[in-house]
Image 1 (cartoon, rainbow, N blue to C red):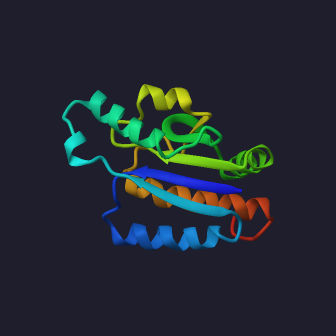
Image 2 (tube, rainbow, N blue to C red):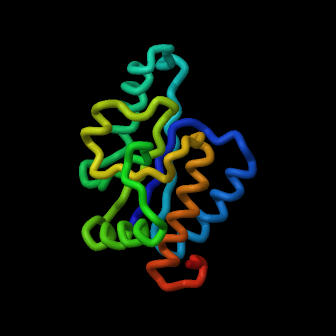
Length: 156
């Protein structure tokens, strides 16, 4: 199974990069894991939130294929306990060749992206920066795979 994580904007904290890289390396034992970055070019930056979301959405649409199962990491998405998230991943792996998870920009996603999405997942009711979500998601994905495989990383 191929899993892609797409995020908008760069990470500016070394500790986030180090933690993310550690989990990304561990994930290679379970799936083909890739990351992609969407940066909004200066010429497309705006102070209008709807224009920002539209521009980010257009760039995102270029990164996903019609066959990708698109999961938005969104504050209004379904919340899971870690074991339930593992079940979600396992179930999708039976039906999908690739899962694409997307961390949105500061203002969320455009209407087009919401319409294209196959699922929405919330990692918390709290709001985190896109930089931290990257690390939190990688750890939870790794945890899900260790649960699926019955490995001792997760404790009840």
